[in-house]
Structures are given as structure tokens and as C-alpha cells.
Length: 235
Image 1 (cartoon, rainbow, N blue to C red):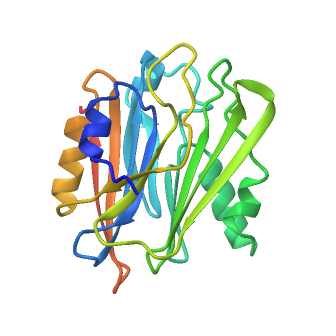
Image 2 (image 1 turned 90 degrees about the vertical axis):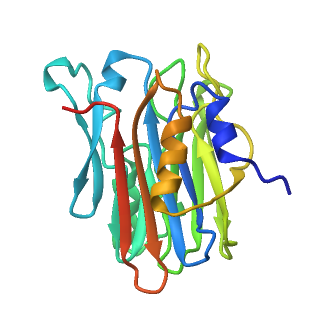
């Protein structure tokens, strides 16, 4: 199994788009989550993460410059009965509502598909971190840019290893159209405490394209979460 250096993956890719990292801390005491967004257009870059009672949401940094909020304003993180849901779109609510109705996250996501933003058809990436630290990752993507064909992939990790996580992102790299992520989530090392982990990701994201970052360390014994938010746009 190849284990990647997350800092290297980020620093060598100018535009992975939106990304999710989930895993286990090196001391084996915390579930670890990271979610970041990037942007190339003024509309995409005009965002910040703000805290909510059950997670975070995206908001316009300058509301007067917001053009189309449909795919960029949403709740990336919500907590429901101890499970933390993190996604790159409004499917966060789809998963939460599905769990509340007694369905699995897979059943909930089978009602959704990639984003309707041709020609990119951005994949919808999602993760659910369970109270015991086990986690699931999924990606809903078009078949080679065909808007008539949706593909769904689900990956489940029921025995996370200390210091190991998995990284999935919307795009392989920059391009026109943007090439969708391919293959399994990348296995990455997770090192340091929350502050060190956060700094490593934020520092290695492309300076021109990075917008916001959310990170969380969840104590597996108490369920208490410590979180950090980095926003490039600061008033």
C-alpha cells in the first residue's frame, strides 16, 4: 500500500478543487477531518466558512459580489447523533435527512448525482465519520463528462489505523474542463496535533486558489470536537 505525503500532494497540485481528508490521529485518540475549498472565479473565491450550531456553512465574503449562490453556498459540515457529515455541497443535508429517516448514507446519496455545472460536472464528494471513528467516503461523478450517465462509488473504512487517513478531491488537477478525481481515495499520513495539521494543509494549498479550510479533531473517548477555520478573506 502506498502512503502519500499529504503536504506534497497539495503543494504539487495547483487546483484539486474541494477536498476531504478523514482518518485517525497519530496518537490514535482522535478522529480527524479536514475540508477545504478553492476557487478560480471571483464568485467562487468570494466565500468564507462560518460556524453553525451543528457544523459550518459557506457564506459570501462580500454579498454585493455574489452572482450565483446555487452551488457555492451550503453546509459542508453537519453533526447528527454523533456522526459528522462532511461534503462539498447540499448533499450534506441529503445525508443528514436520510439518517434521520432511518436510511443509510448510501441510500441517501443514491438520490443524488454530480453537480449540474457543465462542462466540468463537478463530482459530489462526501464522508461520514462515525462516533467510534470508522468512516465512509463517496464520490458521485459523471461518466467521462457525459451528463446523461452518473457513477457512484462508496468506500468504507471500519478499522482506521493510527496516523493514517484518506484524501479525496473533486479534480485531479487544473484544466479546461476540469478533470474529475479518479480511483480510490488516496492514503495519506496524518501527523501532529490539530494546529499543526491545520497549518500543514493551509500552507500547502495553492496561495492563489485557496479560499477556506475547516479542520476537526474528535476525541474518540468523549466525542468532544476541537475545530479550526482558516479563511483567506478576512475583514
